[in-house]
Length: 549
Image (cartoon, rainbow, N blue to C red; front, side, top):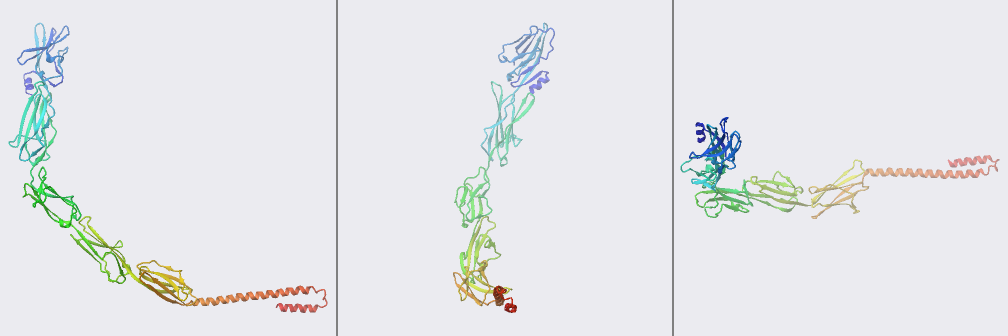
């Protein structure tokens, strides 16, 4: 500071102390051998002395004078260093150390400087908003309890604001508390803002002197709402969509680029006076241009074109349709849309390569047809209609036969087509019996067959009957007996005859043998009686042998 510099130039010793700290002042004199006592005094502004402390060199006692402002604050050491606790602004004085001998008085002055760091500056009384093209008070920057007083500087985005006529006005004032002698500094900033100040930070700082030199403390940033007039009006479509389709709910919001945002708008025709216009469940007739303008500046108009996309599908015929086989059935799927639409045909969940066309219906044409269309650019806009086609037909029969290579059996097949599925029944002409041992194929595209395998012993006629709700159809097939079977029967008869003949021959031989044995036993009984008649016995035996033969 200027005082410190002046004191240094004059050779005065200066002690700097922070407010509230203890001031320590060495005597800075060599103590003489014949010292009687030492004293400390300070000088009033008029130069008159005020003694505050006394120390005897012989008695080693210390006495403090009755000075109210230093009561209980002083301490004088043996080397005559004076300490003053709880430094105050009023302690800024010229203190003198005095060493007294019998024949001389030695003095050493000390200048005391006290410094108080101010509080962190704060921007108060801030404007709620700033308006372009208007000089308006931005706020007050206040820093309190400083000693000595400091200087306040304003900043915009970190750059110093200097006074500028009509745009930047800075008013500075300071006040001192008569009790504490501390300063309060206030700087008021009046500022003409522009749109460039949007989101720009404003700060202030206080620069002050402390025991170690000059320092600066900055305030917190302050950002102000900048008001500026509307220069352009736009219309926003909510919710944001790439395309609008029938059934959507949309809101048109009129926006101005001014601040604060414009709340009242109107259409040139005066339909609405608010900043929003809501369309619920929009239809295609809502397509058109929509406009809004400032109420107080109707020449500022915004417009937007709204296109409501639509998609209509008409399938003819549709639903469940029943036709007879061979009939012609024209089918049309008509599309009406706000843009070109894609069309896809499906049959039984399988995509068709082209649109169905029926000049003569077949059973395989029956199924579930779906015509589906969509607008690729419009999400969720698709339609579909279905046609369930039923192809009916009276039963038609075709019979075929096939002989097994062995010649022992014949396969008879009754091919049937018709819808609803005909029931098949087999009968043998003449007997009228129903044949149940049949084999059937799966029913596909209105067709299936029933198969039987037979080995006729004689010529027969097989009848196949097919019947559904439309008609009963009958067809017959003549089947001849198997030739190989007759040969087999003759062979069987021959074998049976041989077996029967062998059995009869064996029976005759048994009877003869039995008779022979019986006669042999009778002859044995008369041997002893007729020993003399041997020739008759031999003849009888010969006869027996002949008979046996």
